[in-house]
Length: 502
Image (tube, rainbow, N blue to C red; front, side):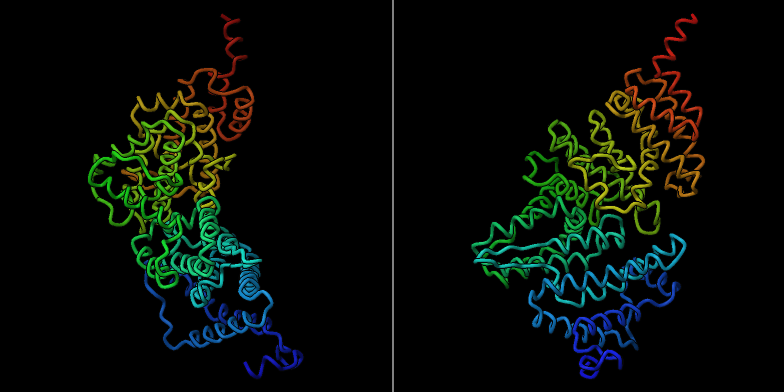
């Protein structure tokens, strides 16, 4: 570096520009790990199984060490220190991902190349100080913590590497949280309210990080407590992290007996993720689902308040996402367990239209349920109609009658059928995990039969005239029989013409 940094640009040097040298070293690391597509697929299978890719005979550790030196020097020489370096590194990644996304003509090739780039980037991310990616400012003795860069990075890039879906890898989750906690510890003790405000934005702005934190809390909790104790001695953890502890303990108690105490005051997504960890994650009871779990859900459902409904909707969202993950990657998850959880949750929501948002695609105005799409890729959101017609036809007839009386149900059912039909035409319908195994054409036929029955049992007021017109137009080309059923059973003009004929 001593030769290249001061050397003239026309002679292959960097002209004394640290940013230029850092860009070259960063590109060398990314190129070194690019490899061939076959190498990438092999490495990806190793990462999915939790194995580390060896660096035997590689110069990568030495290059990473050089990058660490450069980043440290850039922090010392820049006017804005860490903030400037943070934005610079994320800008390098953005440029690299943009080139990865346009280098191939096929969509699948572009996605694989992008994932390859992000896996290489994570190697860089984990080699750099965690606090580097969090901005801390001190203006007139007023400390502020800004997680925006890390949050945007997770929402834009890291969610593409989630396996299972909606869960970041442990090492990435740990690194990001350690950086946020270390940055928070730099603030003065009088700025505790500002620190808590910054952490409180995570549930709304980065639901993926929140769900991942709960998923790995058993391993994260002692590490984060140790970091905070070393940096801030006797001070308690930021409020959000203390709330996560309370929610996880609350959910774990439901494994022994139904919950008699009200849930902690916490975001609905956090409570749902805690229940899912206790009953659907690793370490959860296997086999036949406990009666205590059902009674816990019923307790939430019987409250009939908005917050309890939101907890159940988010729990349904997480379990449906697990079910879709098991469909796309059968070797990674237990499809029947997450499907059973969805079956347990769904009956408690049939009187509320809120649960429809879990299955609608493309998403509409989601209000408090923005996490449904923020935490998952389009690949999963596109398959939600498949989950709808994998779950609903298996419900008891009495429950289906309740569903038909729920405002907006028929509208959602028709939209899901049209989206499922389009998936079938495009050849994007995977083989669902059901017993017995069903071909895509079979599940489409089952969905069609279910929808026609639902239309015949729905009152004429189930759809507004605008909704009916839109759905008739949508189904006219995809499935004329469904369009005709809508017209026959729900169009008031059709009914009046039949009465005149009689």
